[in-house]
Image 1 (spheres, rainbow over the protein chains, first blue to last red):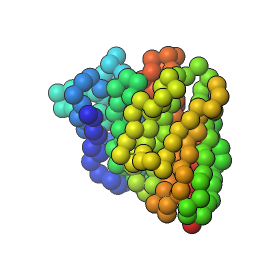
Image 2 (image 1 turned 90 degrees about the horizontal axis):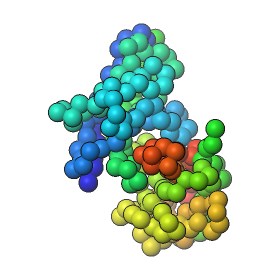
Image 3 (image 1 turned 90 degrees about the vertical axis):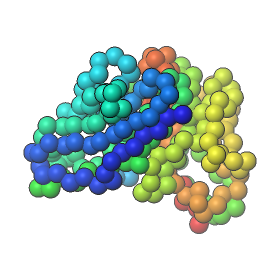
Length: 112
Length: 115
């Protein structure tokens, strides 16, 4: 079985500052890992995914994440926060062809 | 670009009534999923469907829920007798060979409100 833990249900950063959203996973088999973003009253948009290729994954809107097997982590980062980044972010894990297991989410607030 | 569509976008129903949520997955995708998100909470898996049968279901997916692929394009979730706690956003997703089956494409969701 797979599981995901997102540390910090709320994160606030200043505009222009580094964004770091934490995700740790547990999986008995090599996992696929994903970050999704959800804007208010909207659906889920895929930011990026790790599928056993490069460990540093670049996604949309300047986000990237690094898969670290030794730390069982897949933290999401962005060098410089923008007001439009304010949203809920979900980390998720799966194995091929099976369900996604989501974390509890992190609400990102950008301070002007 | 192909996308998953869901109808209706918002459904309001009375407790005890039956509702059917509809999804049109991406053409040629073979795996189909339903998830739900209660307001302010995380996204939870309900059921996966492959080769015209349920491949996995969660403990949430009890006897009041059912899924069907009535034709070659639609994928439906039926809730037989809705409860207040069924109020949530319901997301449909699909995956296929073009993404190596490891990426699920989500629809915009149906917001179900049970009164």
